[in-house]
Image (cartoon, rainbow, N blue to C red; front, side, top):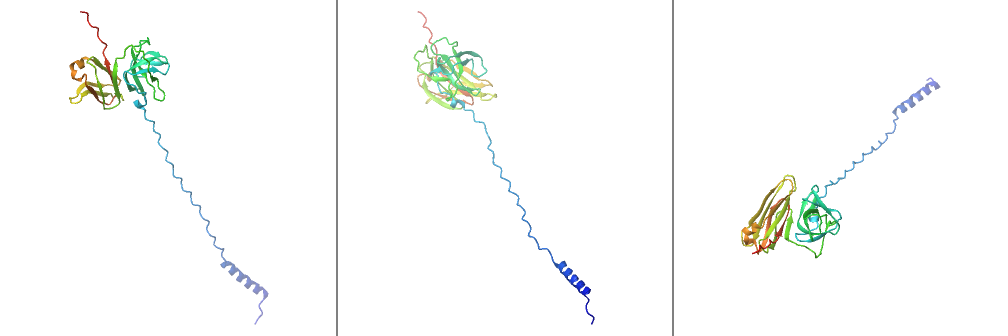
Length: 260
């Protein structure tokens, strides 16, 4: 047997090692964790901002026909009709003494009263409309002054919807009724008024269709001459209306007695 040569031995060792190297594999690496996407934030609901409702007549200083008031806002304009674009008759200084004749009615997002000069102080007008302001910022204030030349206003009512009001008692038939109805929209409104004595059928007193602007009116005293059963008894007022409205009972100026 021939001895194995060193060269052949080295070759055999190399082949053996090479085969081993071929079978060696790299260790399997654990996969890197994939970062989970952050959940999208839930959107926060943004509240819908709605305009505050117009305060309406409930925010207006409350007076009734015949009440005595003074001006608490110097430079208060007196207008021919209720409305910020109506003709200005004059302006009043702080403390001017007035009588409430009618109101309030709601026009141009403002409460208005028809007022009269309380003591003939030459205020520059006989009757006219003034803005009332709000309870928080009033343009008129209740007053107790004693000097009144004449107060013909027996009482009145105002509202923005249907309702029954009163009762009140008319002293005699020499009474007229002032009224004004203001439409809430340009399409107009209606104003219906019945006078009611308990136990009797209602008497229709006012039927009016109002256009796109405030409509004033007057029920003259001859109405009560025709319906004398409404005088001297508790009288209720029943209103059916979608207007802003006001009415007041006014004592007619006494007529001079003719000389014999």
